[in-house]
Structures are given as structure tokens and as C-alpha cells.
Length: 240
Ligand SMILES: [Zn+2]
Image (cartoon, rainbow, N blue to C red; front, side):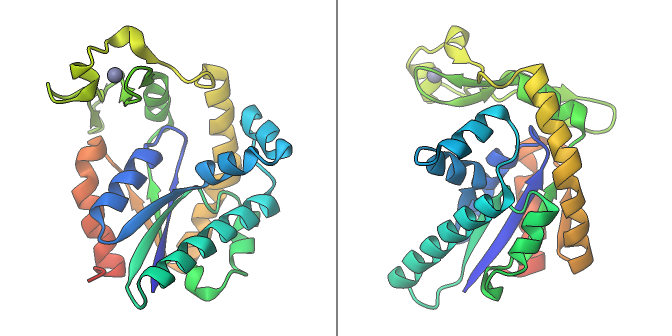
């Protein structure tokens, strides 16, 4: 039996990082990002590629079909490999609009998310974190050179190569190799934030009404992962 957990958060809230961590901490879980599904589809579909590059949202029906197909394939593969086993899928970025939520209502009931986790991070912090994002061109490591420490309790240190065993140190990478993403500019970030506020925030209401919303404030960034794991297990049970 599958339990899908929908992950919601503004650009820069740490959804991708948290999603991957959750998948490694929760028992028998995997992580699916709608961004990745769409990027995969965009190699075959020029329309999707164009919209993705503009930072706008891809048409809801198109996203819906791509996500549903990906989930069904994933579940089918799991069934063949191991019948009756419980497992979880962390779904990052769906549904992102009210229209997507109403399309999701028509999915087979077993695919309906059992829980929606909102990473609730103030916009100014998201902005700081996005502007600090870097990727090492030598070793491919994701880093963040910006930290946050404020009077509201947020304490998120920069994400840098951590010790001597870290590849980004042993390869002698250094900050000149750490590059920003082309689309991480103030203008595109602001645009993505506006889209989130307008299109995605209303979806929180949808989950609230179903009694499935778990709002989580990651004050100390990824150090809060254990707290989030136990909150999720309290809501949907352990998988063993
Ligand atoms: Zn490196």
C-alpha cells in the first residue's frame, strides 16, 4: 500500500533538500519532484520547455497527466518487485494550483496524498537562501553560501563542504568553482514568489479543509529533520 505525502513550500523554503532527506529517513520512501518530471518531459515537449524557462507554471492538465503517469509507473514497478509492502512517496510540487487540486480529486483513491506538509519559511529568508545557492562545477555538490540568524529563532547556517572527507574539499574545489544557477536572479525569484503566493498558497486551504495539513517551521533548517519525521509518523504511522 502506498502513502503519498505532498510537500509544499515557497521557492527557497528548502523543499528539494527536505524532500530528499525525508525520503532517506522515512522507511521505504522515495522522492519525486514535479520539477524533475516536467524537465524530463520537456526534452520531448517544446511547449513545456518554453514555459519552464520563463518561470511560469505549466498548464495544469498537462502537469496532472505527467504526474499521474509517473506515480502509476512507480507504483506498478513497486508492485512487481514486492507485493503488499507499505511504502511512501514524497511528492514535491503537486498540487501547485487549485485547479490541480481539483484534478487530483479525480485520481484513484489510493493515490490521494495522506498528508500535506507545508514548509513554512518567511519570504525574506527564502530570498536570502536562493541568492546563496551554488553548485560546484567540479564535483556537482549543492552548496549554500548564505546563512540566516535572526531574532525570530531562525538559525540556518550556510551549507558548505563539511569536513576533509567531503569530495568538494578532497578535489580541491574552491569558491571560484561554485556557480549560481542562471535563473537565480532577483527578478526571476520575485516572479516565482508572486506565482507561489497567487497560485499555490490557496491550495493550503484545500488541505486544511480535508484535515490533512501539517504546517512545519524549520527554524534550524535541515537540523529539524528528525522533528519533522516524528511529526509525520505520528500522523500516518510508521511503515513497518
Ligand atoms: Zn566541489
